Length: 177
Ligand SMILES: [Zn+2]
Image (cartoon, rainbow, N blue to C red; front, side):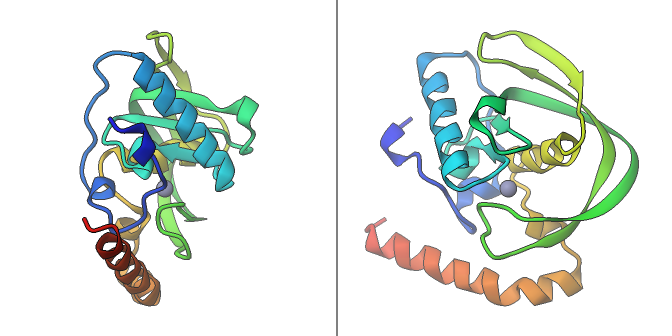
C-alpha cells in the first residue's frame, strides 16, 4: 500500500465500485491506514468512512456518530446482521458530494468485527450507528447510495453524477494515469 496516495476518492473511482478484500493481519500499516481514515473523516466532517473511500481495497471502516475523534470506533472484516423493518431516510456520502438519496435501511443491526488489537467482538448497533453500519458495509461491497436510489431519484441526481464523472476524467488525465 502506498500511504502517500491515501486521499479521498470520489465516484466513479473503480475502487468504490468493487468488493474490498479481507484484512489478513493487523499490521503497523493497517494502524497507519486507520489513522489516516480518521484524519480524512474529521477533515471532511463525516460520521463514517470506509477504506475504499481513501483508495484502499480492504474491509475496514470507522464510524463516529457525532463526528468526534474520541468517539471513533474501528471495524475490521465486519459482518452485519440486519433485522426489523425498513425505514427510508436521507443519506449523503463523502464519495458522491452533492448527491443526497432517500435510502431504505433496516431498523436493527448487529455488528461483528475485529478491533485494532485483533480481537473479534460483537454488539448491537445503537441510534445512528444502525444506518451508518449499513452504509459503510455497502462501501465494502462496492455499493454506493446511487445504487440504492429509485429511478426518480436517479434522474434528479443525473446532472451531478455526470459532473463527477467529468471531473474524475479531468483529474485522471491531469495526473497522467
Ligand atoms: Zn459513503
